[in-house]
Amino acid sequence: MTTSVILGMLCAHLLCFCVMFLLISTRLNGKKMGMEVFGLGNLLLGLAYILQLLDGPPDWGFMSVVNHTLTLCAPVAYLLGAMRFFDRPTPVLRPLLALAAGYSVLQVLVQLTLGDAARHALLAGLCVLLFLGMTVAVLYGRRSFAKDLHVEMTVFAVLIAGICILNAAKFAMILNGGVAALDMSSGFQKVFYIYMSFLATVLPPCAVWLVLRRLTDELRTLAAHDPLTRLLNRRGLMDALDAHFRSRTAAPAYLLIVDIDHFKSINDTHGHNVGDLVLSRVADVLKANSRQGDLICRLGGEEFVVIALDTDRAGVLQLAERMRSAIEQSEVPGTAMKQPILCTATIGVSDEFTSAHAFDEFLQQADAALYRGKAAGRNRVEWELAQEV
Ligand SMILES: Nc1nc2c(ncn2[C@@H]2O[C@H](COP(=O)(O)OP(=O)(O)OP(=O)(O)O)[C@@H](O)[C@H]2O)c(=O)[nH]1
Image (cartoon, rainbow, N blue to C red):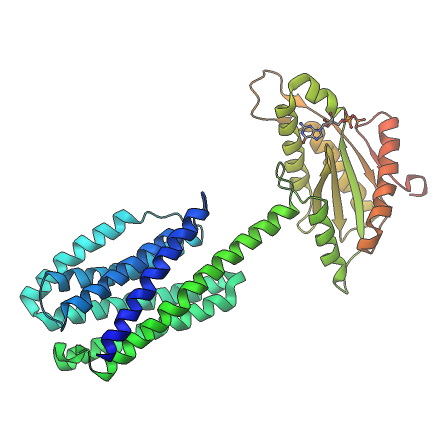
């Protein structure tokens, strides 16, 4: 009786969270992060437990076969949902239908050849393998594709390992005592379904937390980047500069302003879309010619800022010259015109600075150098203290 009540509560939990997952997925236009598949997993498990409640004691029949099939398909659905969450697009319905058909046939064969206990042991054994694989995958993910979710992945690994151990115990009990071991009034079944209820209560909020984290991370990235070039915007640059100078061993920085020459005439001659392509191309060139760790930002319009870190005067001048020459040689791809579009840029370089607060001052310094470069004919590098070098 107690176990049936627990099972009934478990069904209610699973189905409520199924609806919640589906509602969340409808709000996540385009990128659903596996939420709809988690909803499907909950639905399958909820239906399996409803069948178990209706079917009564474990015995051979259509309802029992469907129950076992749903019970096995549910964790596979969670697995597929997790793959989608971690940006590994995977089909869902076809693999689940193939699994359902294959496992139903296998159940009938095992039942007819080895009997009811073997069929129940088969389900428990497959669940052990499945949850063991999931635990290993989660532990692997903690060190590779989900490093930023270290705590969450550890919690998931522990919880999944728990259900793996309970299924292993169930498997051993069926081998020793047959289907009698699955009596709903037994202490083991009580523990089993209490643990399942615990999981059904804890895991859905964890999944929602992961989605929330992913969404807020994406918002933060969007707020810190220029949508056209994917470079940092001014706000992102200031945050990154702050983070750099917070370190006690932070190296001094040099500021380069890169300004495309006569960009207005590119826009006027070829149109705004081509102007955008030129901006993206220049952004790519700056990225390709800077070192890892340097900060690149689109300040606005056709003006870019590069913060060169861990270098000296000679190094930063070399970098500026390399960027100027690469921009001059690059052609804008993807335009239908015969003549490729070429552009040049003038670069103003500041002196070294050691604090994020000094950014505006050194921006003005580089801007003054840039102005001199424009006045002197463009397509050149001007150094703020050129006369002293
Ligand atoms: N396509 C495109 N154009 C932009 C964007 N932002 C600003 N612009 C244009 O960039 C042009 C900047 O022109 P100016 O400031 O006169 O500079 P310039 O023509 O490059 O001249 P110099 O800097 O003196 O060589 C303007 O025509 C803006 O409309 C953008 O996001 N996309």
